[in-house]
Length: 155
Image (cartoon, rainbow, N blue to C red; front, top):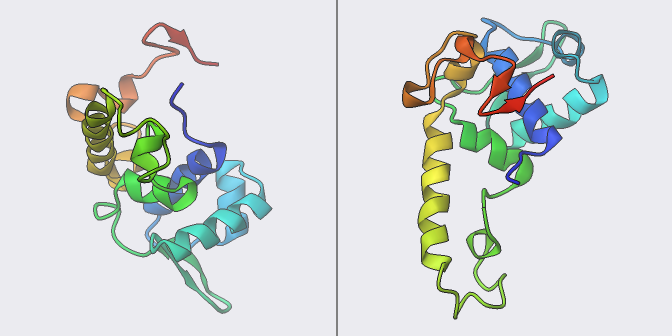
């Protein structure tokens, strides 16, 4: 199963929350808004700052904001800031990581598939995730999502 880590999911939620604001937010305000614990919010904000996604302002009226506009930040940036390089297979993660990569008949296909996935995720901008009605082209409309997607129920 392909799956984002919980921390990456939370980092995307925090980034989308910041994208909806026109100003700064404190870690405690983001925690209240998102339901993510304050220690986890602080941990993720540090990671996102290091990755250049979020910017912090110190002082009495400080807080956190996006380092760039939501249109300039792709989903890939946030995912890779938390989880590292997107790689569907070991040979996509790093050269030499797979002991059969020199004889693997499918490696070149996985490289193409991995690149397509990265490009698809990079094409989704944070601005697309900030609102509930954005369209993702042929992938559908976020506001039309139901409790069952592709046959899988969501609670």
